[in-house]
Amino acid sequence: MSFKIAIAGATGNVGREMLDILAERGFPASEVVPLASSRSVGTEVSFGDKTLKVKNLENYDFSDTDICLMSAGGSVSQKFSPKIGAQGCVVIDNSSAWRYDPDVPLIVPEVNPDAIEGFSKKNIIANPNCSTAQLVVALKPLHEAAGIKRIVVSTYQSVSGAGKDGMDELFNQSRAVFVADPVESKKFTKRIAFNVIPHIDSFMDDGSTKEEWKVLAETKKMLDPKIKVTCTAVRVPVFIGHAEAVNIEFEREITADQARDILREAPGCQVIDKREDGGYITPYESAGEDATYISRIREDSTLEHGLNIWVVSDNLRKGAALNTIQIAELLVSRGLIKAKQQAA
Image 1 (cartoon, rainbow, N blue to C red):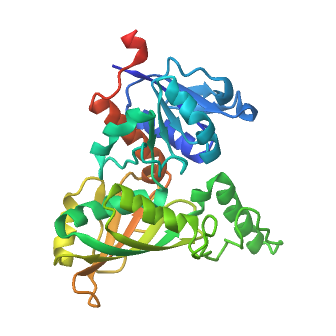
Image 2 (cartoon, rainbow, N blue to C red):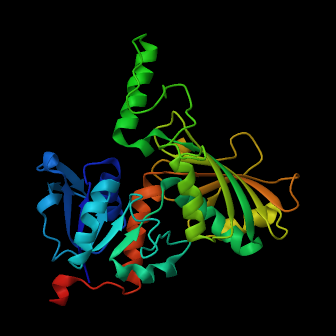
Image 3 (cartoon, helix red, strand yellow):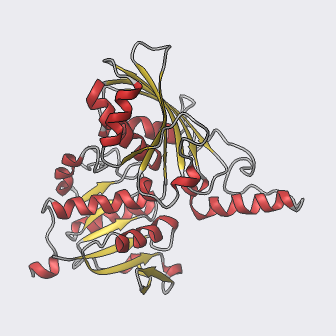
């Protein structure tokens, strides 16, 4: 059985990554339709060895489409996803628009695959925030082993998390520094080249940013509402790949060696943890890879049952495009969706 797939936001960083990953993984697609706003209509995008022309999202008929991979931003998703779902097309949304809706499952397939059963209420499934996705992949097997009470997360997030404009700004500012041109900040609140910015998304009343709140809320929804979470989210001058320093307090004893063994066997995880120069993973090395990498696993002597870990992943892949397609694969493998054209 093969399925007709639409990709909304196909000209963006994540949309293009989705096209690449669909082809790489051999997803059973009878047809792939790239969609974007009217200003991008006719733009060409690559899908495997094919070149596809972008169509207009605003007037596209989804009645014969099985799955829409939505990566066009929150406001666009809020406007279009309910309409698409009402036409019998399942929306897998990459924005924050539906993550906290109790009638919309928030899914990382390695973490909470059974939650996908609830998608039919609105025909919408939410993809988590990029920094949360990699975090919960690493936390889930440890939580099952020893029960997580509290986590303290410091993120080091690449500029690709802010889209193409973020990547362009880092490139242009870096070049300006080397040739002594004025450094202009448009996308970020302060200069990002050769700097770090402790501010991602808008500020909230308690002094946290929305990005930090997302990590808290999404971890609780997918993993366990009883876990206490605090986060500081930082933008760093890296093009692709998010890193996280995570301090974990457990209910029961767990050693670094035990954690290392557990994570080596966990789905989606890859342990790179040698206590020597270079015996760890960095964001640069994670780019283009599917795994969530864990390094620097060590016990925290200030807690009764505590560990520190370093978590790294390609935010455009596991943090966005790959996870979205894994959700689509989960729909197919569990028989939760039937192809309309074949059913007709």
